Image (cartoon, rainbow, N blue to C red; front, side):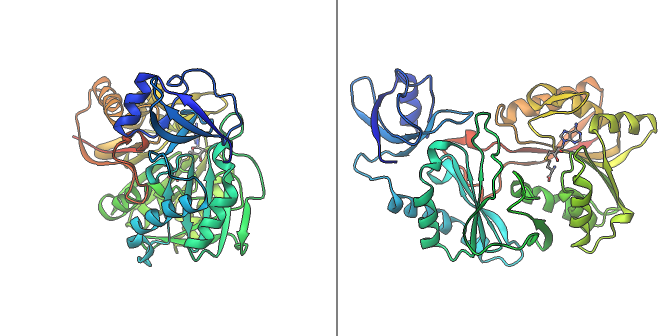
Length: 396
Ligand code: SAH
């Protein structure tokens, strides 16, 4: 990030920035940014007063992030090292806990550098880049990380093609190459992860506390349906928590082998569990026809998904999904409703859930609420960074 340009900020964005928001929006700027991504932006108000220094990086939200509000602070490797040091000190408890060896060490704007997240997997570090702009800092980021940690090896995911999707690549960056699957621990459970195999690693670290709650409080002696199950992480937690039986449903063909693998490394006989490669919406119809009723139903759909017959958008379709789940939940059963959609907040999510219960004439109460766990550090002045919303709903 060597180039720099001055950009004028309109009053509305100025107010947001002054309140502490780190997000630079396109509409908030006067004129276009006529420079390559990665250019440093000297943000000034309509009177030319300095507000902050940020960088230009196109993401689905915004065109960049604030880096510093100190006019004299230089942006380079030393700046990044300071951010990393602070982030690492926030996670000391995680580093000292041998029962959990996979967690987030750097959470983008929550840790002072939007567009970059870093996850720790048993000594390996995984960088996720969310814009070409932040990727222009790659050399400095890698050097800084090697300076402030004892990393074994570094991998990366580039998530910034024109559609904001993952760019297929080797993913290896520096240090030793890992042997995959790498087995990590989470509250004593084992999970197989792959840092070199596509966009996803095999586990979503932000659901750690939810898995632990299911395992320790809600699974014992229950039948558990895990929809959109991916590698079956919620099913593993439920099985280890003493579930009578788990049923995992996911459309992706590879989900079956991946789920078998996660069960196996936890000493669970996968043949006693149901693992179905199937469209969840077809499964709901099948289960209803058969009169099935589960004690616990986990709903964790992607924000947006297209299958052969259906297009699902969490923002539009969550109420409908919930209604179908309610239909196949046993009396006094529990629904774990989760969404990672950043396009609506907890209030709207709660309303969507409420509507589903109203439409089905079913009484319920919210027994637990989860947002991002502590390692996904959120800046208190930018709560929009907390995209995760999970409600545990008890049917009455
Ligand atoms: N709940 C999982 C993560 C889900 S990721 C966990 O905690 O690990 C989203 C998953 O939904 C993907 O594995 C994808 O294959 C699956 N998926 C998307 N649309 C689907 C559909 N219509 N039916 C079944 N699975 C679907």
